[in-house]
Image 1 (cartoon, rainbow, N blue to C red):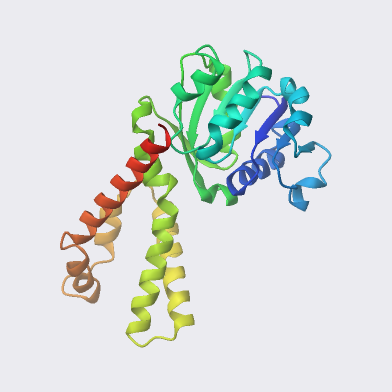
Image 2: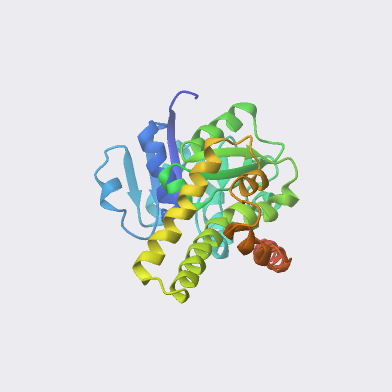
Length: 273
């Protein structure tokens, strides 16, 4: 980890922005945190002396030059308006780090110039409990020390990886960015199927949740084992699990996931237009 930054700006403090801020504060990654969001900060942040919150752009902009890193955590649909407002006050050495789905580096360079250091990142919601997965890619203007700064900021919320080909970021979004929702849908579906077999709804919900979280913990315990191996380890020949898997693995489930992830990827591309 590098030494603490003088200041970090966070533009947008919703669920993901708040998760990032929580991790940064807990690890002391900056002396000051400048937050721009039209809504009041949650009490957990508002009482921290190192945090300065702004609800109006005109109040924030005079302080923007203090930040070594500006993290853009607003919705993709308003990103262009936000960048246009920030661009006149941004300094050439400031690292711009975006966590918005679909928004490309070229798009940010149109606002800030090709010499502006820009990193595009895709985290996911488990970042709120320090178990996120973030993938990053950058333009040529990003220095090595700025890559390390970005790693420090995003490792505060979980694991990370670098991607050389930005064109694959929409695929990353489809797999891990949106992925937690697929797991929650699995919980819903598993519980609903249990109810149809006669289980009490509350018990079915607990069984589904604990099964999914327990299986995930088991997978995390030995990362050398593939998902296929873990599945095979709990599948006895001629048993109940094999009977269920013979239905699930008839090709329909894979086809559904192929279509679902393609839809997510294509939506990400559309957001970047």
